[in-house]
Image (cartoon, rainbow, N blue to C red; front, side, top):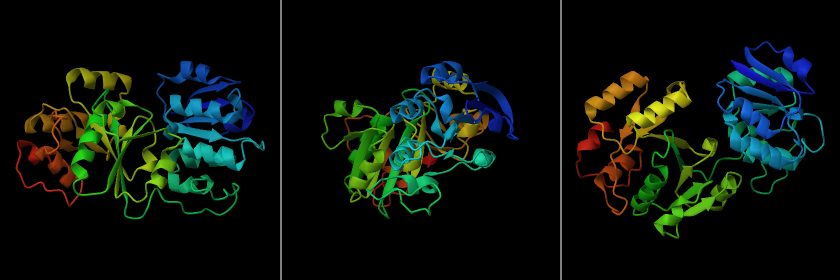
Length: 327
């Protein structure tokens, strides 16, 4: 079921042949939208941009992107010069807002066929090119240099250990590859006292990737919805009872959303039978089961085995380990 937030285009949006669970009309601040929908479950939220107070200020839209899952938002643009400017559209893409349109008749298509970064790359002023207008031909802009691998790590349960894991993977990988590790919208890397670790914002992540195109691997600690900039994303779950119950209460549909995603159990005490039970009860497939790791060690067999399972062929994983059965 879908939500409609309308203002100028209330009538046209009301004529859409889609399932609606809730519809509100008027002008709203981002804080008011958060208060209404922060704990409200929906498939997609179709937002008439004129329903947002101060929508021509891109900083207001940035606040929207921080507070909502942009993969669930479809933004209806008006015909103002500001909203259709090259800078505005490019910044929408930088925020992870890919489903925007001026043609309301395309909303139903976007619900079933959401855009990826490649679909809107022509609007993104990533390397200083002149962004085209909405009706101009697309320009192919890739995530990074051909052959480069960008791997994101994202906590699904709270504090599932993405920052420490990214740090340890970087330490192990740099023996075999030219690798960078970056934390997005966070600053926990500072506590590792490693000056090679980087930080960036959600808006600057594309530029960071572009500037580091000489790196073979970029590991991204994702504290925001910037999954589309990565070639693949690892979703981390700490499978403790408390963490799982909190996760399910927050989003009862989470494992449907994670279907066919790469799930890794981190800080796990589960054995082989426990993992099978977890998969059966959650209806998901576990890619790998990682125990608690010692962040003071720079050569751990289990990490090398995990990296080998991810396809990093140069890594030496010759030593055996009890968790290798979960590859």
